[in-house]
Length: 377
Ligand SMILES: Cc1cc2nc3c(=O)[nH]c(=O)nc-3n(C[C@H](O)[C@H](O)[C@H](O)COP(=O)(O)O)c2cc1C
Image (tube, rainbow, N blue to C red):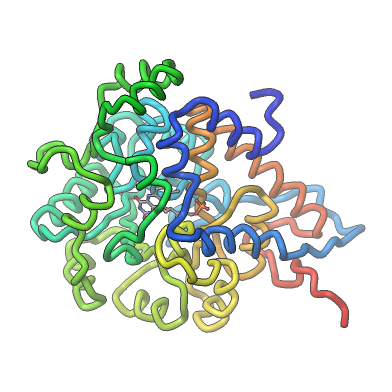
């Protein structure tokens, strides 16, 4: 890890260590990946304003979301199947987040279950997809409560799953199928194979007691299980059941952000699911300022394309209170488990620190739009 300078280094290691079908499940987006690419391109196009001779000798990174303290304006995004990126992957990421004092958000479709992660690390944020079986959705919320989760992250941008060409081409199936191609890959990545086999977790941890029809493509399983009829009106019964903090994830415009607040959200994640859902949707950073202006005072979290501390600073300047990292976390996890995720967080912290100092900022809660360079006309 000592020679790792940035996230691209970890991404390269990750690509080397894990099977192609796992790497590409994270690396890709939906359809032509235009929205996924726009997330990065639009962040890169934003320039920061250098300021000099400001006293930046002490800098402050602590902040909070909905009253929940965090040591950095950063949290780990929910990512399904993280347990395939490293044996017991969710536990490793949750440990790294805990050590850094930032929230870890466990996905509904994790490999380690709510109980596995709670036992290993204590409380975390739990992300929920609403299932067709309302009883099961309710049981997931009860389990999150029993695990002491302080926040429920309700993902609203996946009534059905958009096609990811790479997953089709790689034959992504859960649990993994032992085809000749997969066996060959597993032999080539034998360390990964041995680790995952030892961990003994090959499917969705939170659905262990649910009877499924056996092997199925991930996309088909989502289509069969998620509730596409769920609406804003239905959020009411979730809000009633859940007395903790409610964070609505997957909003890209002012109207939907307003609806989220109306149904009782404590914070909103401006997100296009990392460019994995509506291809052709705008990048999340491009819509952030309008939402922040219209909903002044609302706690907004941004995700999509965050790869370094400069990206976080840009998001804070444009109205976010914190950012989530999805792929960045998975690259670190695949590269070196908990150590790799800690490295990602550390890199982002240091990059943010330096970039704050060079733009004359000393407090993550006071990063204003003047940090963004506006070209002179
Ligand atoms: C491999 C992968 C799996 C994901 N699984 C989930 C999920 O289970 N639930 C969810 O709300 N979002 C999921 N997301 C979306 C992330 O939470 C987040 O919105 C996105 O990764 C942010 O973009 P970034 O990867 O560029 O940081 C997933 C993203 C990736 C890359």
